[in-house]
Image (cartoon, rainbow, N blue to C red):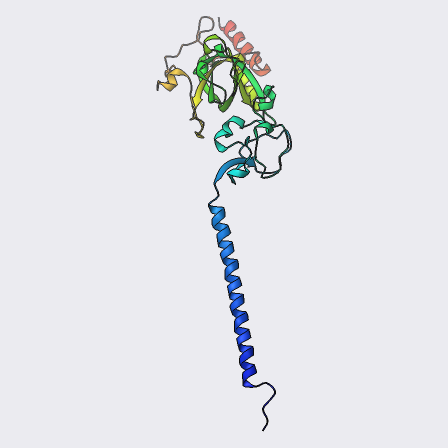
Length: 294
């Protein structure tokens, strides 16, 4: 019987080629994996620094708040020299962009209007600025600074009593005198100021104006991280706050006073106003009988 064309020797040669190809593929795969590992390790060894970036596409005029700004780590060699870090967020909070930013772009000093020329630039949409004279404010008003949060109480006369009620809570101070947050000037001599400008909604602004005209305002400083509302005061007059009860009403069960008409007390007190016709005729008949008996 004749053997096929492929002998045992040719089969061995093909097996050797297959094994060599497999070894080469394994070596190339290992080299690729190792290259990726080296690249990842090299990236991990790159020095990075946190930078403020735009959290979304922001047009010019956008307000920089916690929703508009994010923090990203960037390689130091890629960070622009004018980029702002997280430690400087307080300087740009509530400021507006002078130029548009794309999502992920670093926030630079040139992008931000850190000192707006107008107070209106610091107002959010739908908010109002209300100015109150300091001499109408009590408590810590002379020690406040722009950016502080205060609770406002109003004292006024109501039904013959002096009462105190909570008016507004967590009101942000926009300016003290002419000094805005971050400005160096604008205060009076000695660091004093004569007015406070507050950030309020239109409804709260009306309440504040009415309370300023009809009562006495008192400001109380609040911690910026304290979200708890002020306790309700069911009765804000001084006796109620001190636990003093109202005097009891006068008693109405005293001795009765008899009413005498003419020279004899009547058995029935007549009604007020003209009596009915029937009663008039009866009374007239009784009076006639009395005259006749005399």
